[in-house]
Image 1: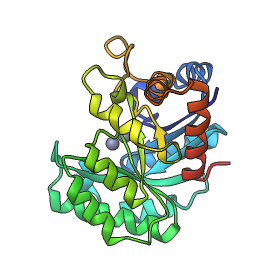
Image 2 (image 1 turned 90 degrees about the vertical axis):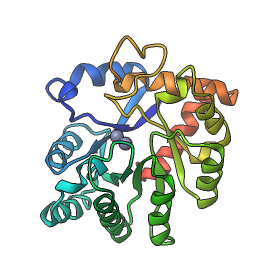
Image 3 (image 1 turned 180 degrees about the horizontal axis):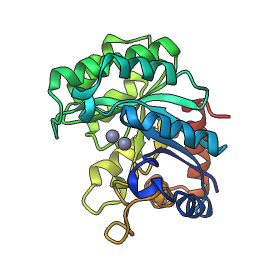
Image 4 (image 1 turned 135 degrees about the horizontal axis):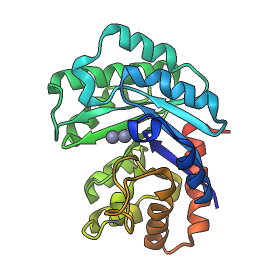
Length: 257
Ligand SMILES: [Zn+2]
Ligand SMILES: [Zn+2]
């Protein structure tokens, strides 16, 4: 079995100093390829180092909406330049987070648009983070209609109508361990609705540890197998079949070899 963790924060402090044991456990669990996410200017160099060190390590680079108020034009120039690196497979995560509102909303929108301009220019897909901001995020994506290569809404937990909307738009949807939680029937309904050629999985580690390890361990890439197993169950497939399809979709979306 082979799975791709399409969204991991492997430069966060818990992993940074000694990533090896995490990657070993990950490979043992069948998770042998990773996309590590840069969320701020300081992480860009770090994720690029990881992609150089490991063959099956790729990066998405962007500035998290939480950070939007700190982003300078120099930072945006660095983003644009670094995004051209061949192991950078996407722009993001970027988007809007009106749940935490760590940055003013108008600045979040402006920085989101800057990311979409870069993605459109270099024709790489976009990883979108949206929380309590679905309509506003979709309006901004609409401004770029026809210009973006591909869009994934990551860490998905939307409603049935939102899921329909995203599928109509041609966007991809990526699920985390939230789909394994006891009270998230809505997310399982969404997982059931999304066709396999539009569905990806991610840990978003170190956040969102899935059941049954949720309360026992902080999230790490190996735990992707629990999320995959739950979606396979929801879809009435074997884990192996699901993993094959999710991997094919992820390779297509991120244009991986
Ligand atoms: Zn996110
Ligand atoms: Zn993330």
